[in-house]
Image (cartoon, rainbow, N blue to C red):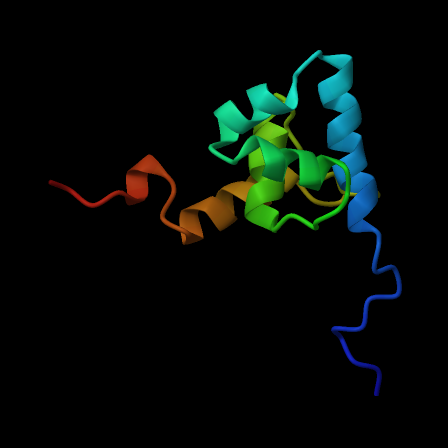
Amino acid sequence: MESINKNPHPDSWKILVLFIAEIAREKHITHEMIAQRTGLHRSHVTRFLSVRYCPTLETYLKLLKAVEVNIFFEDRESNSDMNVLFEKAMYALGRRPDKLPEN
């Protein structure tokens, strides 16, 4: 049985990081600006965007936010309402106002 952790494309993360770097260039957002917006050191931003280090999912999301880009999921066959599924996931995490504890 093949291991679930075996990645047939170990460098696939690089395309996502290079995509962020291109967006930043297009928008004239510097590494310094990204560092200020994310709380990361500028040298770390440079290392990530030059694909020397693979960012964690949390860091990747910070980088996306810093270059002012949203990501979304789309069902290829349009069989699922992704907004409803996202809301269910957020509710499960307790991230919706109606789920907040009362003070």
